[in-house]
Length: 215
Image 1 (spheres, rainbow, N blue to C red):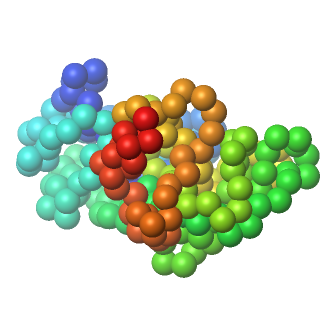
Image 2: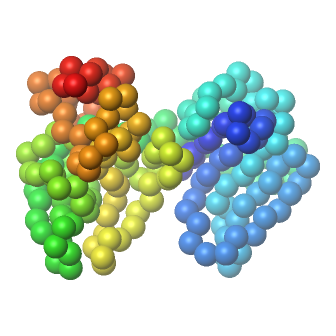
């Protein structure tokens, strides 16, 4: 997993790279212009911060989550090796926001408003996702943020549990996706079945056009 974030307007010329989920106390180690964040108990690497990132990564642009190329990741690995950190970053180009199909839905065993869905995503995989939206239903075409997705507000989607039931992803609302003309009321974004196909990457521009047409 490789989740990268670059926001020079807010954080300066710093590229943040996340490779694992924080579960407890962290340890921070700095070598030169690279900061390694690790699990204080296991020493597993959780991510890196690269200061003066434009001097390290060619063609670095964007604001928020950025998708790094093979060349850019190679440049990061060279920077890690130069300061005696393990150079083992790998490109992750799998789509994290995909169109899903809610195959099944049942009531949560310990909640009167949550539901447990079986939602088919890319490559035919079926994810168990707990959803609290009032309009969720079986048979819907929806947007799924898979594990490893960074939401527009900066929140990263990790495997978790909601009231004791495992949930591997999130079924999204238009507001959570920061789409223009998004309704402010609660509820997932239901996509028209004649325009979106389960398993394909979610096209944010196309989704925005759907909302515009519905407004």
